[in-house]
Amino acid sequence: MEGKHDAVVRHFFKVMMPGFQETLILPPAFCQKLKQEEPDEAIVATPKGMWKIEVRKNHEGLICFKEGWPNFVHHHSLNVGDFIVFEYMTGHMHFKASVFDPTACEKQFTVLELEKKSNNAPQRAKPNYCPKNTNKKPIKDSVVSHNDENAHFVLTMKPHNACQKMPRMGIPVEFLRSNDLSERTRLSLRDPCGKIWAVKLLIQTSGQYRGWIGRGWHEFYISNKLKNGDVCHFELHRHSHRPNNVVMDVQIFPTPV
Image 1 (cartoon, rainbow, N blue to C red):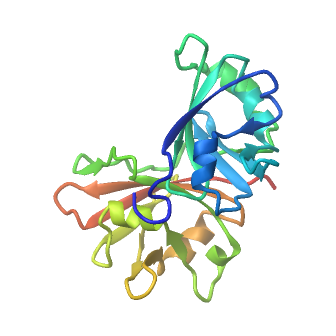
Image 2: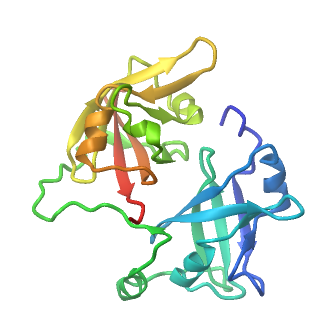
């Protein structure tokens, strides 16, 4: 990774100790790397979905998971002695998490268990699903998914993402660089229903390096009924024979109304 998060610890684990149900304090070494930042929200992705959790710093300056964490605990049936392995993604306090029991085996959640615990969870961001009669287009054999840890990122929609005069959606610099994306890249977004949306990738190389999606983003935003606070997970797929052709699958987790 490049940029201000270069030296940030990418993986850490936390053992559930007595009192873990109300708050979770992140490791000091991880917090030290982010001491210049003032995060107020974390996104944690597990096989059960994505979870918004309020973040605060305690009197020692350590980052803590607060509101939303008890709900995460409940829906993942966490107990004292369980532990969670966190993977820090491309900045912005986004994590992937795997839950393990005291035997060091990853917890498996049955379909019945998922259904029992999925109702009325205000802190959980549930994904948008397409109606069953929609003709979802599968990924063809000629398109290969990157297994690289930098082939995906998560963003929370902000007011500027809906701006009609200059519709845009910023892309993390680490993601652009690690995947060699440029203005020559032919970029498309695939929504949860499988519809392909051609969009324009814009790169600013003078001054501060940054990139964003311009033309086509507003249509994608409106058609998929996105709104402020929704969480979108983007995963990159590159054409095996035409490397400049890139598709990003977008999974949408609406914020509770």
